[in-house]
Length: 130
Figure 1 (cartoon, rainbow, N blue to C red):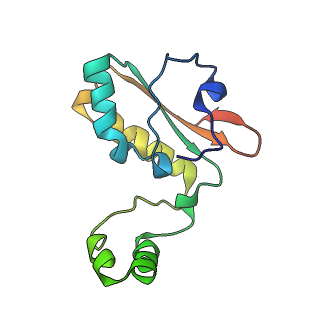
Figure 2: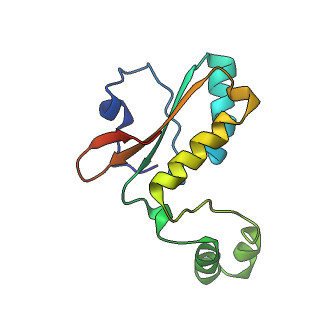
Figure 3: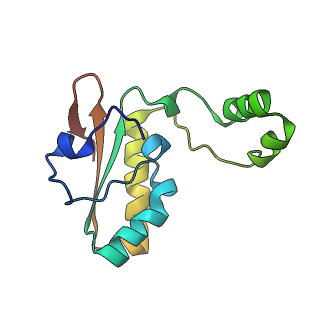
């Protein structure tokens, strides 16, 4: 989701050669619907899950997010996100590994190559985690 990241440039992918699915925290669970569509309808055979350094999802938890919604938007809005999991995480590389394993555990992902990466915002380089 971070606008500072150009996945095509980071991985040397030519225009039109990849589907890029962006969401807060690069969550595999949040992107799963789009991944299934990409694979089943469009023939995608590889997934690169990429999270990045300095990610905002490392800086808060569900309780904090719900409190901000209540403070900024009031009780009705707070009720709408009461059960929402914001999918935050406290450790970057651990979450990359967890999301990759979660994807690999899905039957729809059988035969699809899945790897996990960290994009270093400070240097513009990517490094493979799993």
